[in-house]
Length: 299
Image 1 (tube, rainbow, N blue to C red):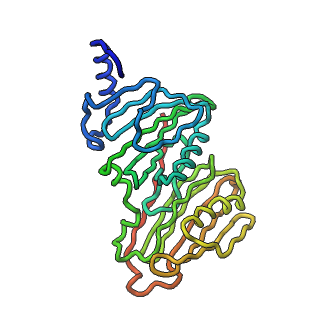
Image 2 (image 1 turned 45 degrees about the vertical axis):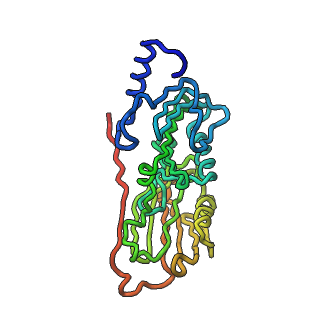
Image 3 (image 1 turned 120 degrees about the vertical axis):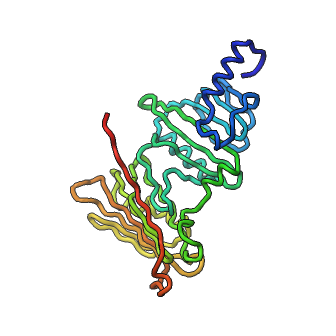
């Protein structure tokens, strides 16, 4: 709040600052009342990095503190459209989308645009952005953007999942992060990584066809440096094979999607990759695995 103030204004400001303070004080340090601002109907004037904003978004207000800027907006669009906008614009600007990423890459968990938070990192700017979406009506969404520019915070999000394995054992490139089609529900299941190969699985709920599934995931695999060798689509399954020269030697990959019985919109997805040769004796040991546990409570 700016301009002249009364004792009541100062008390209200201090209360707002304390209510908005991070519940995890070790992330950006303790609250300093003198270095915070609560701006009603306005965005922070000098953000350290550019954050895209929807043209018709209404600014509710913002809260700033050292290294951290929180912004609240509303827009007359459904949550999925808002998420699509931010994912496209941020990825194009060089941000990494870490939302629901699995430990070693592969299929990204996305069940709903309101599955929070959606996390992005800009390594060059040491910036971390959290995006939370809340549907207020059928086509109205509240947007909460939380930006942190602090090397200590961002470093926590920069560790590669391949660090699950000692570097001397890993002889293949990472599994690319694979995002679902817009509006689809993708739930990562399990995965594993060894010295010469890796595997990731997921379930996908979407009304699109098997051919469209191949067409959607193919460019994401290609963007990671892979060249497609072959593909085919059958009644209940589709697959594609890939090849690239990895960090040390040639690699190969197989992507396939299987439509589950009696479920026109339910698919099992798998990607497997590794060196384009049989493992040697000293490469047949060691590895890591991971899984996703989902649960639902009533009441």
